Image 1: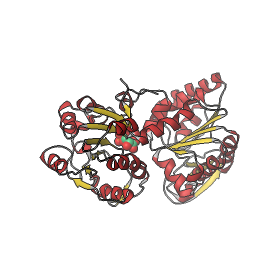
Image 2: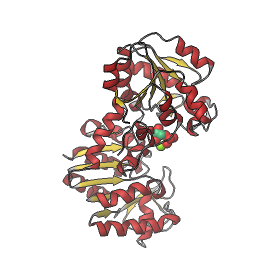
Image 3: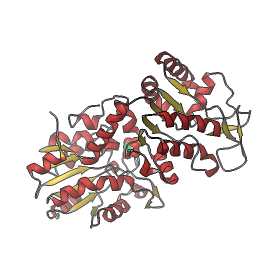
Length: 394
Ligand code: 3PG
Ligand code: MG
């Protein structure tokens, strides 16, 4: 059965109800401070609608990968503070997500109050989707809202396990908004241009395979481009290459030819001796002892021209080591080209979003997705467990 949307749940009434909201507040932290609050701000509308309707709101999320152990550096306490600022109201925080402490905190909630519970992944039961853990979490609440689109590719206790134990389940506004925007990429207007970057072919194999046959132009950047260059027998110097993926790269290149699409690889490179600030230069062939750290200017121009002709663009993953200013020009150029294009554009993944923000072009991109891995899996047409639990599919 298909679960409700938040609007239907609100229409049926939530006043006084304890509503467990699974949000994705997995934000980058720097020295104990939230470094980027995009996911927090995106989670606010659902939470405000629930509190305004008089629900007792219990928010749960993970942060990082603590592996079932209590790791103070991955506490959600600083996120409670940032969430309070984004909501413009006080957010109570409880230092455990199940057990007597959490039960007492929930019992103390008045109508319209909001409580954030500590990192779900401090308990191994979250990622193991343990039935007892799921039950303990579900027992805190009456109803369930899943708004954690960015975590919907995980079959965890808070995204799937709790669902049968709660009276009503609904999809939140952030989650529904993501599905609406991603629909335009799943059924794109052509030309459809995809830009995929990042370190490893192995991380994005499925996305590469699926998008190769669907995109009119697939532009590959980041370190994974060097595995493709190796597959073509081109020199890669000391670049990061995954030898075990060269065969896959071969297959993907062949599939692109068969599908009649274009798979573009870098034709020039910024190379350095180390993946660290230091000497670098721009070359057409990567010399021995040097490693590619960014796409070169001619490549950036070619990828930009593809974007300019596109009607739909999807971008995930940086073109180089963009955290290092000198190796970030390719990624910045791509961010600008995506923004300048008249195409509908969707950008996903933490690094690409950081590049978009650093370039100041965010307001000229149609949709900044809160999903990284989840967005890639959705666009491959894979069933996402968190969505399936709500009766939705790609
Ligand atoms: C993400 O940032 O990709 C989501 O929050 C999921 O996190 P995970 O990859 O650690 O499961
Ligand atoms: Mg991830």
